[in-house]
Image 1: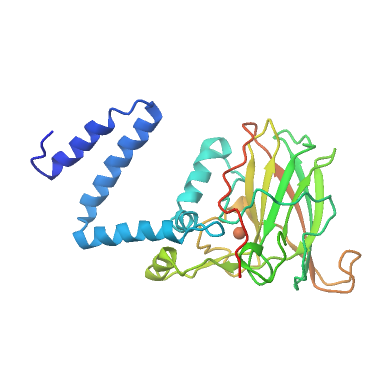
Image 2: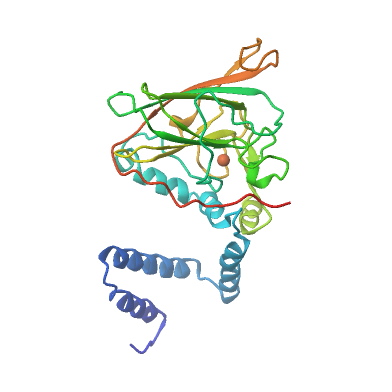
Length: 301
Ligand SMILES: [Fe+2]
């Protein structure tokens, strides 16, 4: 097709994309072209702005390394990750779900821990945290033998892969639920943390006059064949950013009942305060599949 005017560009691209053999890929590409061209028309994107857009996309790729994923951060900062999650869980978005964002910090090589173990692998000052969790199916039956990855930030708001001061795999572990579907562990209470703003995500956050904090949370991933792998986060309600998460992740179902204790305990000795969390997870039937790990390594100093 020889292009006579701006409207014909879209026609030409749609004609080209229509040749895609795979029906799902064809559907996605047709909608992508329709929305992308519609977007350019709606904002009347200038040549200068288009050059800026190209730079931003290239910067996201160049900023991504084995220990940092700027693309995941951008998807979260635009609410795309939250939208994809909520559309695909809870009976395809019809009912409340415990599913939540994977985030950029999961590692697929977290060490196996025994129930009751501590996730603290190098000195990490902060209030103690004792977590008991149960895994159930939709009828309330316990799920034994589920593999549960846990990972979280330090009380200073840094994941071990971001912090050369923490030991390899600090505040990370992988547990297996017992015959009653339960497991427990000790750790330190995570803090909310700022997402990195030295790249394109930072430009977005500054331009939109938002803070760049996520409220404190624990990450869990629960894997058991026969059930849809549950990727979730449990948020701390006492965090000042609980209702303004820069990644739009906090849903009503995921605000955890973290309890503060001011008396000494067998787990943490005389140190107070410490916190406890009793958390129940419900798995939907479906395909068990671990995601592609967004990072693979710890940052080097
Ligand atoms: Fe996180």
